[in-house]
Image (tube, rainbow, N blue to C red; front, side, top):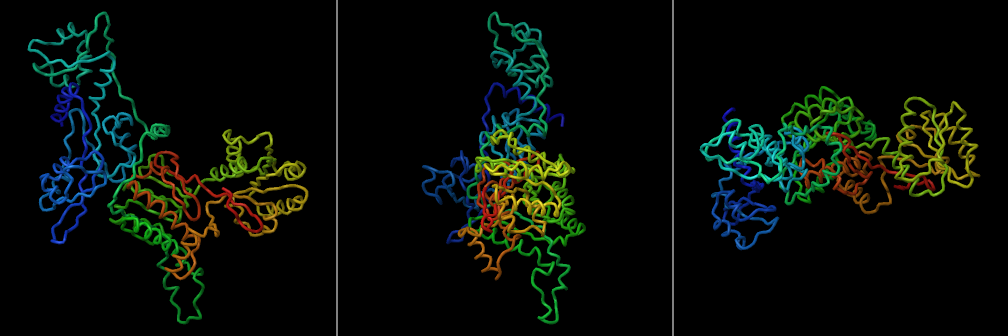
Length: 622
């Protein structure tokens, strides 16, 4: 180890007298095809910056051999062009395993499966601008096996030291040079010279060695010596990197031939299969009566999405595991070799299993799509967690935006009972309504509690000249039903619109549909299928019916959208697709999906639907 460190120090001395430019690394293809004569070829897809010379050198074949099977490539090659490399002459195995030689003062780091650019920056304590200086085409969608050029700490310290001087020059040491003579000649002491040339601490002054020294101008004093410390890179730094990450372009992968491994953990309850077997057809129940079939349509919807992706060229190995809603079963699945090599995992469905699965995903750097869970995600998580279910804050944001965009004349009232859960929702609602970017008139917002006769005050505050928007945060079915009944009576003389979150009110079975319709009940929900969408929804319904001889349910739509969304992410951006998701704009069936980074390792959907009752129909407003 000491020998290696010593070598890196001495090599860094030469670096400062010779500018370094990042090298283009040829990524070897494993795609093989045969011609009519049975001759095998590697199919190489040309990437940016690659030349015929570089490709021939990388595969260790003569340029003439490549030109023979690809006429014209010696004149011009283009990005994306397919070039056939004769397989029997290409020395591919050695080159795939061979590590590129780093320039002096640098190391080459090979990206591991599931690693993100942020994790590499954190582990190597280097900032984005420094990495991009030596890796011009660096993007957030790095791929496993990719080589990244990283300057050593010694070089970075030397660069900072050199920046303190107006200019520096390269000087070749002479036989009689010592630190005292150099100090008199260049006005720098031994500490400053070692700062500029870290290798001197190991090699000492040797005749013929090239070192960096300040260029001395007349009447200009040289800065005094001060120790240099590199900036510490912390995980929290990435929370404020918005502007920096904009400078990293997420380039789509062209001609992606990678085979991705996708796992689904679904509670299919195969252990209950004997319940389905009956002695007589008269004993067969409706399909929804069987617990074993509850989630089968999720698998069927996902299959249709993956079939559609396959037509685009997407290749995947798909594993479907039955968790049986059991912790023990989920744990045993996580220990399978196939699980450990996944690029993407969708599921599990039950929150009691998510902690076990997330730990295993974390250990194996697996992208985890969390469907419904609300469990806490540890701050030091390494895997990328994608939470599909939007937050209540997102729901209130959507309702507030609808008010600001579509209702010019409003009077807003908020009713609650004062318990902890309702106060939490009140804080989120206020955060949405008081957002200065929306421009809602906060003087027209009033908050009432039941304890202070809030319902009576709302009734007395109704404005016949405005749209009276009432948010009811009360989580009590009897009180909500009574509230709706009274508002329906007052509707005759006032314009009243009721707003709430559907995940609460959808549980209530005693709310009169007629009252909700009259009050233009408006709510936010993640799930909504627009039956009038004759293009996408009708097409999916037709495909589903043709395949499975029945109409899809909610889980089928959900599975299709999730599989389509994350399948596209893998296909176009590779397994490290997380930071590229804002660039994805895909139309989905049940609800729009837009993943936004919440913190390190956690992304969450920030899109939802705003739905309103209109003439007994549910219409999407936002």
